Image 1 (cartoon, one colour):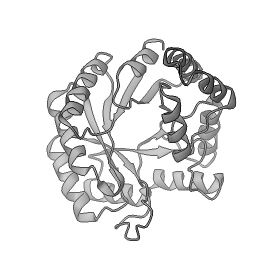
Image 2: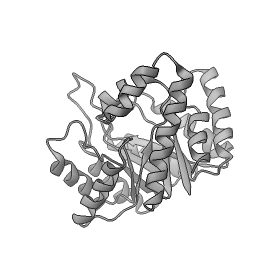
Image 3: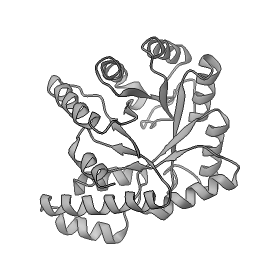
Image 4: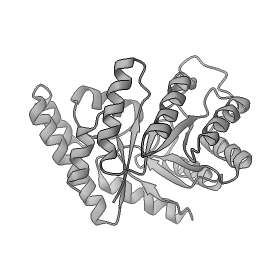
Length: 272
């Protein structure tokens, strides 16, 4: 079984120290890579670069920086990728990124497929590029068919693999994989896994990104929202069962949204 973990770049010294410890703990299960997020309009670009280079230099696990096209200019992307290439980084997660309200100039790239195509044109196959997949449809998409076509466009542009938005219904993942195969698209689709540790945070994130929380899960989380031990136990059971269902159907690669914490993801991984 293969694993990978997503981090966001810490902004404080304490946050950096915490993440360093988290990375050490997660390294114990030999993940494929650690990905590092990139804020809207590149707001965390320097912090992302610093974190990525620190991982690449000091960890036994490869770094995979996120790259967002919103707000990015071609020359800035090249400058950044040249630094990554010089550091022997060869994997990226290419995303469109969120468009902040009121922003009109979104840069040289409007969609992730344009960014993927540009990176491939400049660096050939130096970078293995992962893109985003949305089993339950991107919240801004007009409809499911349009969303599937956007995904196919990213693959045609040169994407090597994809990581899904998190989900709690395994059937959503299997349906998505079937649908893209019918479009003639065939790349590895790694399920994104979000541990459940905080009711309010999960609901907020899910509303923002369009991830669906099944009613039976939501009702239990509402019941346990002030009882963190019960919520964590229930969350571990739900997400572990989800991963086991995926694994039974042939999935052997999982990408965890760690929220810069090690234990929730490690507990799930140990049960697989």
